[in-house]
Image (cartoon, rainbow over all chains, first blue to last red; front, side, top):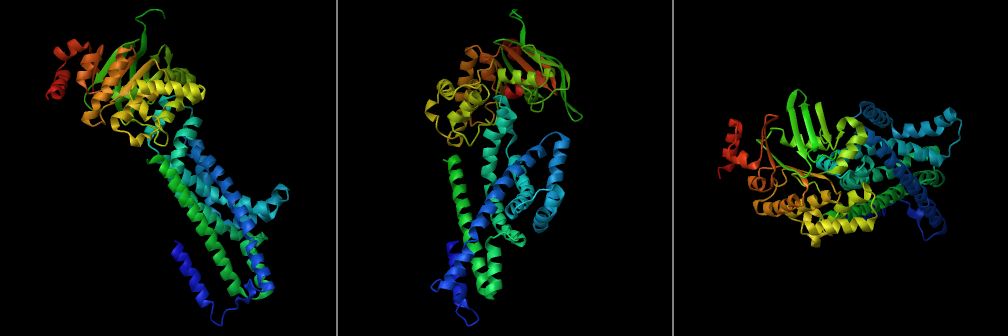
Length: 246
Length: 249
């Protein structure tokens, strides 16, 4: 992983030496270059805050949607199924526009760009989280429920102490995937004016007219961010596995 | 209720279907307090289903089934009441793999019986002692042998301090050399006066501890007898054939 990242970096640097490039816009040794670079990197704050807030909400909502989907009662299963199918069918960009421009008209409440972004991202992701949880919970052997039943655990305790801890270990790679996906999809919130990485890059391109260099920096920003997240998820996976296997 | 002969478990005309297939046909059986019942029969005869009905892992359709006078018809509360008095040991152990042995044992007492942690720990250690593996308390189930895992499972059930223990082929998934360590624990439990219903093919164990032998075939109880009569002079042909097959070796 590290080597791949290094190669990509070197490639851009090498190609960046040709006369088609004008790295001066983000040259940290000049004042204006340093200001521009700082401006670009400052977008990280909202990209991370937005994605993390959204994923926390979507994991909770996803679980709340997944559990009725596993019920023996048909209406509960129907609710879960319908939620997943409907929400999954709406493109994220459409959902962002609808929440930001449409929802205030409907509800009469004003909504900030940040929360519009969080709601839209969390909503669309929750349908996927629900499916991941459903798969994870269904993968736990029936005997675990039976053992929990035989020691008089309630449904809530069975889920909390027996089923979910095991399910979460199994779905951790998939949850990690969703976090990476969320970080990337947060770039779409730039269209309603969220000052995250992509929006900052767009604004700088408009004033500096150097799309090639600025968007290259943008690509690298996402790349580095996501490589760090992947490494973090892998570390977490190893830690949780070691709990179980001597 | 003071009558000693009052059965602790009573099946009266119990019927059960899986779809259109009838797994239990008109089952009537009484088990009294402290009695040790061994159920045997060919596979697919409904033995496991029978004992799984007792604690509500399976729902029966016809007849009535009561545990200390509480029936499954008493709704959710009735079932909770019943399963708090009935412990169960499974063929596949079904330990919780993400918890250590002691955590496996403490989960029921702390969550369902609401015991304080310290008390639950003492209780758990006491039962681990009883199944003779106190030194394994902090290991994970996968680090133990099959026999040890099954003993942990027995201890986990006992921590709920049940009045009745159900054993669903507890030694069938074990390597031969580990069967005895589990049976020893079960014999000891029987000697302590626990009411036990065991589905098992271990006829040596049955001879030694059973008060009552039940033979099932095709969803019916074919024969009920004390071990002496059961092994020496079985009445039905089906039972004779079955015994001949498993006692051949």
